[in-house]
Image (cartoon, rainbow, N blue to C red; front, side, top):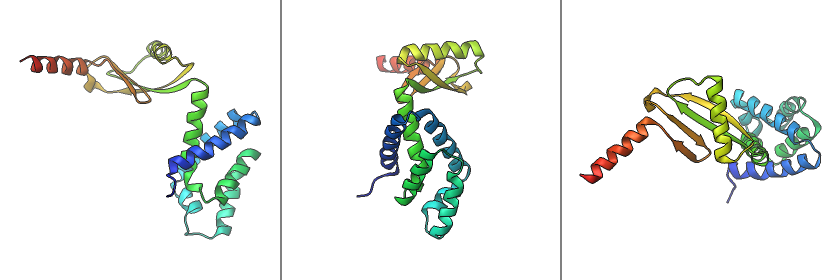
Length: 182
């Protein structure tokens, strides 16, 4: 049974994270992986070219050398290993798993906040503070979404946890209560 891309990503990122910790280069590796992920996202055919069978190994090596040239030595060695193991199609998953581990180790969470209006800087900082306290973290990377359909209030999503303080939710809760009691 073969591993899923997500499983491969976790395994490779774990090994890379451990080596980066030993070399005190976790921050540098994080930056390199984010950059590599961006390259992959902007060039979807790159994964296919490096992992597929449409071009020769020699051509793949030329592409890989060009790609590796912009990174530090550890990342170059890592990309060589991933290439040799025919896992270049898992780069995005490896980067995601590495970022997730880094965030976990540093108390950083990704939060999505949905409101009916665009938040100003003071409101954004206030929400970040609330999320930090509620989820006991050091830093919050906040993504703001404006959705007038929630009528009012705020919906905060952190991972698989949702705090729904929207007017629509309250309205639906009241509606359910009234229907159950009748």
